[in-house]
Each structure stands twice: as C-alpha cells, then as structure tokens.
Length: 244
Image (tube, rainbow, N blue to C red; front, side, top):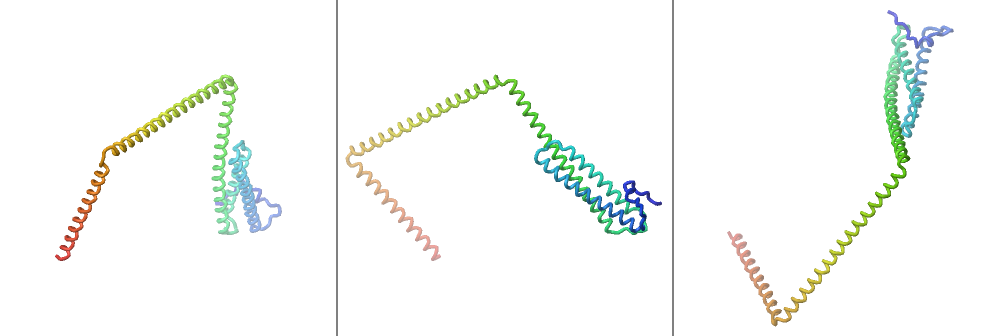
C-alpha cells in the first residue's frame, strides 16, 4: 500500500518545472535538510540568549521562551517530514547517509529540548526569587512607612539598653580583674615575708647550716655506696652467666 505524503511536504513536492523523479527527490531532501539546519541555528541562538538572561536577571522573557518553543515545534515537524520522505516508496533507493543525518537531527532536537527545559526552569526559579525579594522589600517599606516614628524610638531605646548593659558588664569584668590583681599582690607579699622569716630563723640557730650540709653529704655518700654495690652485683651476675 502506497503511503500518503506528509502535509508538511506538500509545498516541497510542488514544482512547476517538473524535473525528473531523481532530481525532484534530491531537491526535496536538500530543502528539508536546509530548513532543519536553519532552525537548529536559530534555536541555538535563542537558547544562548535565554541562558544569559536567566543567569543575570530572570525577568519576564515569555516572548523569547515562546519563540524558542515554536522553533522546536517547527524542527519537530521538519524531522517528521524527513522521516516520511525516507519511508515513502520511491524509485530512488534510500541512502544510508540520509538515515544517519535523520538520526543526527533527532539527537540535536532531543538535546535542544532538554536544554530548553533546563533553561526555562532556571528562568522560572530566578523570576520567583526576584518576585519574592521584591515582595519582601515592599512589605518592609510598607511596615516602615506605617510605623516610622514608633519604630525609630523603639530602635534607639533598644540600642541604648544594649549599650548600658555592655558598660555594666565591662565594669564587672574590670572589678574582677582588679580584685584578682590585689589577691596576687597580697600572696606575693606573704611569700616574701615567709622567706624572710625562714632566713632569719636559719641565721639565728648556730650550726644549722653545717648540720644541713652534713646531711646532704651523707645522702650523697649513701647514694654512691648503693650505686657501687648494685654495679658490683650486676657485674658478678653477668660474669656468672658468661661462664655457665
């Protein structure tokens, strides 16, 4: 059963000069490819513009979005027509390169559609953020305009209370620091007095320095004796191990 040509191909198939079937078929395919490449270039330019606008301001760009969406629909129509052209029975055999080109155009359409949805989502998010920010600023301005005098008085009173509280805390910290300094000075004077008393006691008792010196000398002697004994025992034990 012979397939009816797509309506989108009707203008392409009408040729007043009626050349041969091969020439007419080649011209129709070339026209479809040319239209597809043109639409792809326009779509790429529109996507670049939308990307820049979405990253910068996120303002109302419904005109650009509508134009891009229309171009994507037109490209879909052209690709469908190219598929119909390949599937239609003809005296001209189907070229494998035509199938490859059709697949390539489909991939490009898919990528452009995916990119358009992503850019459109980013623009919507930026627009919602800008609208929310404007709404908050409007509410702040309205609130300030309604309660300007009262708010200013409350603000200054609050700031004054905060400053006074900070001053009180600073005074408390300084008082604690002074008290700590006085305690340290008092303890230093007490230690100095104790040292003087000990020195006076040592000087008053005759022979106490000699007694302390003898005690230290005896400790040193005992330490040397113990070290000699331990060393001798260690040497004897090592010699015993070596002989056995």
